[in-house]
Figure 1: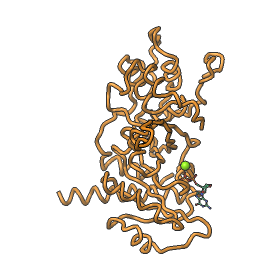
Figure 2: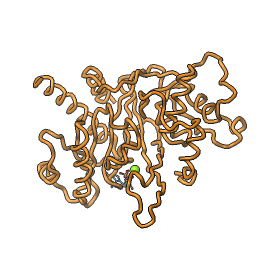
Figure 3: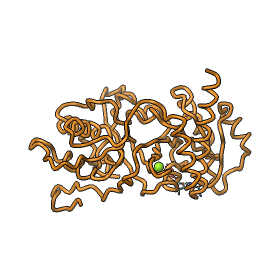
Figure 4: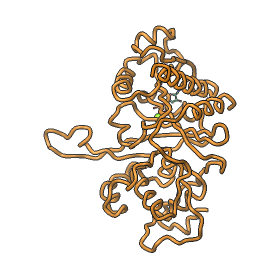
Length: 117
Length: 207
Ligand SMILES: Nc1nc2c(ncn2[C@@H]2O[C@H](COP(=O)(O)OP(=O)(O)O)[C@@H](O)[C@H]2O)c(=O)[nH]1
Ligand SMILES: [Mg+2]
């Protein structure tokens, strides 16, 4: 993996995210599912290149970590970008991200699913 | 979809492997263990997509500043991961990470809400796994399953020997096999999820 490109991240991240280092919502985890809202609205003109790429990448459902890998950006940075796009209604959460543990019913379904792989 | 022409800076992402439209939720397990123990191998054995990787930068502020110079430096830590869709509507993610807690903390929310942890061990270097297990026991209450990755020529220990050497919490499942094969890797996952369910049932009964 290209580690050279990450050298300047602390500074670049700061600029790219408009000076914030944390997303405005704390519900985004690496496995949170995201999907672009396809309602024909254009991003505001001040939106950055990475936000455009993020929306293009999420035309189908992907987890936050997958988006970060495809964009070659840290998950923490993509969480901030995604958070802004969620606030603006350009991106939607596919899964309801909660901080609860997966419930028993979900675990049973996962177990059945694994057994029939 | 992402043509180079529309992204002249050359940052067009590799063609994304989207989830099926039927998938509406996700769960995750962590795959931890020392370098070279077979984390990426296990993840690739199960994953429906080629293993992906992402990096996070870490400053020496979190790992200890150089005392002589007082300088901070930045280094990066990689996490690789894969996914498998189960039951049509659930994406199961497998996140591979070195066991040290200071590394997981880089990925905020990585351990939160996880189904459990697959702890990979190599019988040639059992002691390398002590720190990982200490971290897991001290900082999480996640269900664990130990996966003994059987490298050729590695000493074969009985499950009881491994359990004793690693001083595992009572009831922690231990499975072994070659994680290059999908059946073994899937079996490790089913064992972990079944254990998580049992632990849940025991807690409910005790409450
Ligand atoms: N013979 C054998 N080799 C393995 C097995 N699992 C992993 N390896 C090899 O061991 C090396 C390290 O594995 P890797 O998955 O990259 O370890 P990681 O650092 O924990 O991600 C690779 O060259 C794998 O091909 C196994 O079960 N048997
Ligand atoms: Mg690896």
